[in-house]
Length: 112
Image (tube, rainbow, N blue to C red):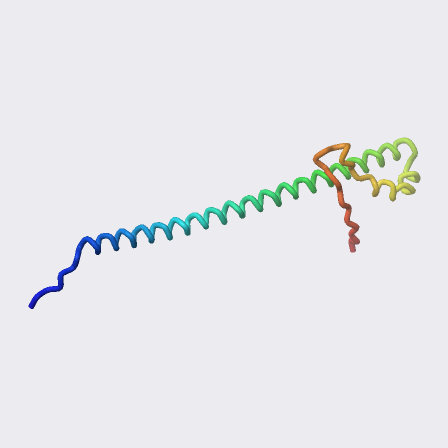
């Protein structure tokens, strides 16, 4: 009985090709995971920056309204403050007062 002759040179080349292809697939999977992770982190950072800008705008609007309210109360009393409530609600920061505030969009909410 004679054995089948196998050409070892072709077998080694095929094995090398399979190893290279497997490493290429593994590298692509790692790269795609890294890119997805980086994209997600960038999105979270952008949301955090937008949130911080909104908080800063809210603080600026509150400080602007309160400073006027306190001055009116000290000079003219509680009756004047009660009469000017609508004016205090309209006191929002302007972009020329602080450049990081930008245009402020006020949303009306009903609480209750």
